[in-house]
Amino acid sequence: MDSKITIKPVSRRLRVVFNGEIIAESDRALVMLERGHNNVFYFPRADVRMEFLKSTDHSTHCPYKGDASYWNIEADGETAGNAVWGYKNPFEEVSEIKGYVSFYPDRVEMLEGV
Image (cartoon, rainbow, N blue to C red; front, top):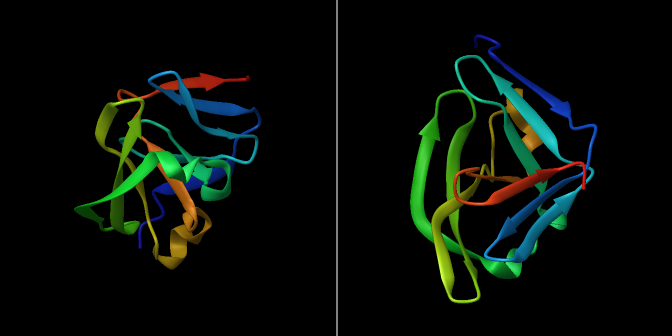
């Protein structure tokens, strides 16, 4: 496999907010650097308020990472559809993201260094 992905720890605290609710906050996030794509932050599920996430039937396949599962975010009567994804069984080359989820930055507010 062509090694086009690099995963590194994030050196600052990150927070995800949706509709006024803190959905995730972590100083253990990872950043995925993938050629041809914007950087993507992954949060450990332990640092995500999973009670705001509702699993959906949507899924996608990435030839470099595997099959992604998706969640809606639901907070205070508002929903962001399929705004969160994660790889339950990522390929070995990106095994660091197992147990992590990511958020579409255009559907949530992402705060850095909080």
